[in-house]
Image (tube, rainbow, N blue to C red):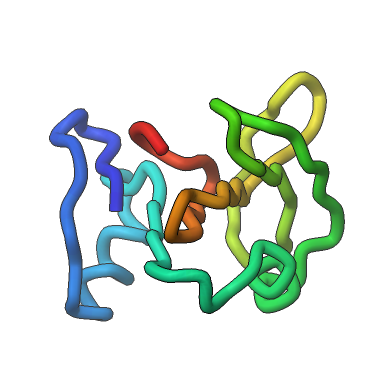
Length: 104
């Protein structure tokens, strides 16, 4: 979870703490790293019920910008509302809500 206060990020294992931060003004975004190649970007988008997406390359990696009605607030990227970003790493899948915070 990335914090709006500029304190960087917190790694959470307690779902109650996640919900408290998600519904507070402290929340800025989520970064989820899925190790290995067990899940594809298409499977993540299907589970999030993404209604539209576009593929591009970012830093030489496969990158998707998408919108899901399940994930909440979106950011405007050149007139397009986006609230899910997915990047295929070397041995992982990185998911950002609304965008990936930090490097990938």
